[in-house]
Image 1 (cartoon, helix red, strand yellow):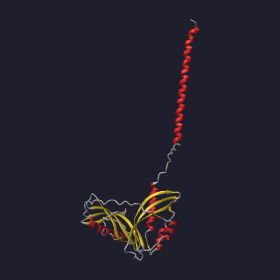
Image 2 (tube, rainbow, N blue to C red):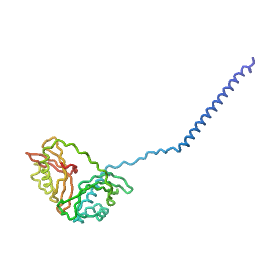
Image 3 (tube, one colour):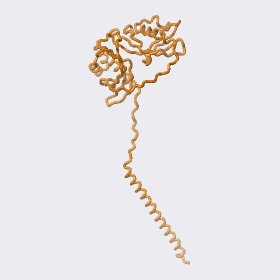
Image 4 (spheres, rainbow, N blue to C red):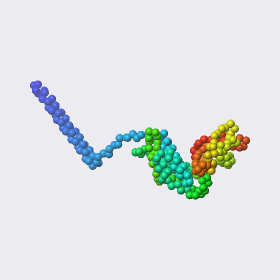
Length: 304
């Protein structure tokens, strides 16, 4: 047997293997082309893919600026809707402290009769191209024309919603225009709560609180304070018209109470009406309630 005879079968085997590889490669190539073609047809039928939006960082609201904007807007609305028709000069002077926009709002206001703000509910604070706008809802008590200053008389109560425009300036927030009336938001009315256990001193607390507030207005608290307590009053500049709201929080001490009170004052000089909230700490000594402390507080929602 020659050397060529020995190598011939090996060559035959190698060429056969190469042929199988070539055929297998062609099959794989055609399968890939087919899959790509199917995917392309599906893409044409489905249309272009929806672009995926990259997340955009939104600046977080500054809680300090938000609170300041709500406070300023609430003060503007309280002054805007609190007036006596007989004192347009004082009304304009009050609004002029908010700058030219406040003076313009005062000039555009109708001062027929009298009006006061019983409560103010600050709402959302939204950024605008020029600054901020604050939603305010106010409970306004209106008195007819001819009502005598210092007397309550017939009145109507309603809610008003306004948007207050503010600008952010290097020196702080500033009013940039007159508050614009807007639609009232839906004010949720909570269901009536089941009556709790009666607070025995509540009946006697109301007249006692009225005496304390009257004495606070006139600086006549000598016999109404807990011994050792000192409290400056309002110097007789106002008088108590009514205690419009009151809620009592009993403490662990049965002879101590904390009271939130809503007060309607009458300005003795102008006859205008002012609403304020106070928190009173009272203590019972020898069967009588005395004032232990008083500070500005929230307006209570109940009339306790």
